[in-house]
Amino acid sequence: MTSTREGLLTAADRYLVGGCLGMFRLPDESATVFARGEGGHIYDVEGRDFIDFVMGSGPMILGHSHPAVVAAVQEQVGMGSTFYGLNEPAIRLAGKVVEASPCGEQIRFTSSGTEATFAALRIARAYTGREKVLKFEGGWHGGHDYAQLSASNSAPSPYPTPTIDSGGIPSGASGSVLVSPFNDADMAADLIAANAADLAAVIVEPLQRAIPPEPGFLDALRSACRDHGALLIFDEVVTGFRLAWGGAQEAYGCVPDLAVYGKTISGGYALAGVCGRADLMSCADPRRRGEPQYVFVSGTSNGNPVSCTAGLATLAVLEEPGSYDRLYRASERLKQGMESQAEDLDIPLQVVGDGPVLQPFFTREPVRNYADSLKADGARARAFGVELLRQEIFHTPGGKFYVSLAHTDEDIERTLAATAVALEAVRPSVTL
Image (cartoon, rainbow, N blue to C red; front, top):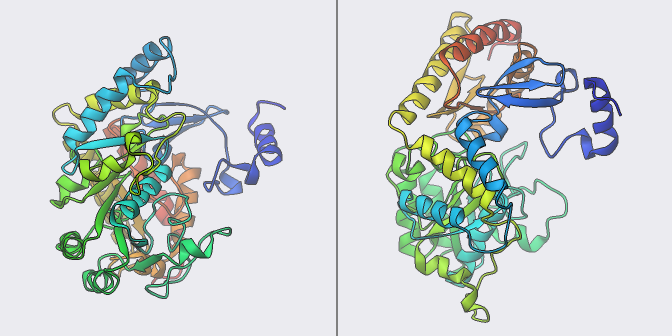
């Protein structure tokens, strides 16, 4: 096996399923192998310098190899990587997250967002004694059976019946999930009321992918859940500590019963968690084992000191005055710059998002929910992303931009120079 780009890609195709690490595979013409990251940049094995807006799919909110995170992790690794027991970094991080979270009283760490959303739903089922869950079409809650329903379907779901996105999902899982369009408060409230006797929880990304909630939508969910005894779960894996110190709960002024965290609390390492009211979280107390409401939520690497140390170092930087102002300023410059360029070229582009989470959609119609996003020109969005890769801007074609504290003014200017070229390249496409 050679260490050249071509040799490594050949080996990846030989040994890794799909030649990738999961669902993220770059187009063949843009495929590469990354060697290191620094700040807002990522470098491949050929030494090419990409401005990174993937940011590890979000965790690198401070940028790559942040000195404070590196130093903290190096010190902790010398003292031990994991103990499968209480450790000071885990206790300190738990306190930090709970105190910042408006709904927080206790937390249970997991190793991934998928595990955390699964655990939150399990807690809701055990606590309420009910089985059904309501989710929103296009909402992403990880890879477990309940999450892979109407999350990435190619056509609108037959509400409230979900579309199955993956093979291997048992009928029991799909039969216990209801699906509704995001930002349709009336349909969601009607479904909650109609299924009140069986509905354990409503799980929602308060910022769904990059689509913001309309005024009153989250409050309507909160009210309907309270009225009918269902739990409201915010999936804050993306929004937690990113939209604000108190996450989407603070940004949108709505407090759920449970919140799921990941990405920003991990510092780039494997870590997530479920946080919420103490009476709900107590279902996972091992001292309650054997009781009907006891819920198993455990794992070998949960709360390991290296990940927790990285998370603490990350949150310490985010807590510094001006951090969120910088994130929002850089994101707004990128958004306004792209939209202005598209307007000058008469290209139907809108950049949807909130704070440092953005996504370009090639359409003039409002994007309020997942069905609306399917009407946008996805082929043009993917072509735009591929052209950005050619311009050495690392961006998921057709997907989101994650803006970090490491992105400098120069990075934004270089990116906008690249988006101008990319928009010109996709201009010949049919105008919507």
